[in-house]
Image (cartoon, rainbow, N blue to C red; front, side, top):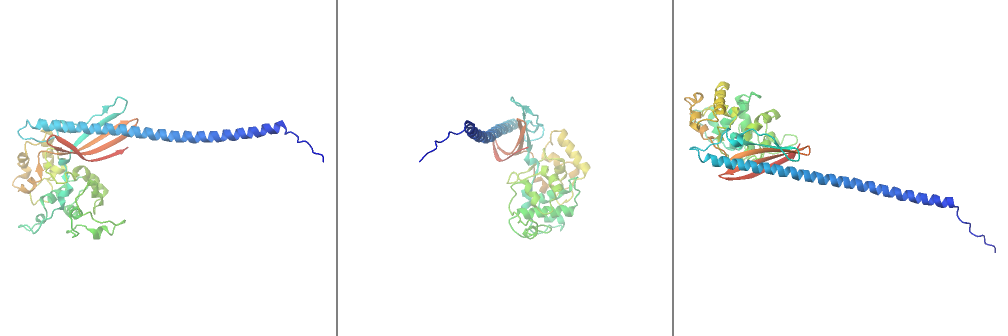
Length: 346
């Protein structure tokens, strides 16, 4: 038997196989490197975002601490007054100016008096029985009558008294614990017919934004009311006459009145408030000519001169990113605590 010796492979063929293997290894390595680079970039960006978010939150909480300090200083200053009060001439109410940060960007914060707004949760109460005069006004509490006047005092909407009463009753139905519909109000039978259907809350509002779910509250109405109303404190406190806006001052009127003051009368009150740093006192306000010969006892119970609840609005810019913090602050003597916070990015 004759065996043919194996002939060696051609050198060019061996080099070709080696080149293919080398290219395969290179391709796999390149794919792995690209994947690793993508993961690293994502991880780095995520870490950077977290760091910037933490940095922004730290600045915003610093703004909250500064607001706390301002409110404590205001409390201490009020102790030297014969009659402590809170008005727009005090340090906490001054217009905010941006504070530049060392590494670039800025921080700004401002305080608003939540007791300078109407508390919506006051509308839950109802009047039992009828008044001696038999008028429509006898069906409403002083707070409800005040809100009916406020709705008519919004210049953007020009609501009449019937529309204002219907809206007030609908909000009252949203707040009260029962499912009995008030005259012109709205309960589950109305909301179940909406798309999508839902039910009345039947509890105090936790946020003024709940207004958007109440029957007949349009986007335009909500935008007009938003800066004038609040749900804090949850146990309603008096409206501060020294910080109330013009529509709220116009809504102060005698018991039994369901229409607001005239624009001229309200403007006179507003000018007194702003030019004199507030009214001399609650009695001085109610002695104004606009209230002559009117019974003011009911509305007096809704009014006050000092505040314990404030809203901080703080904004910070870090690395061209803007963040905001909204804090509801409660001041009790020299103790200030945040009872609610909301934050977001722009």
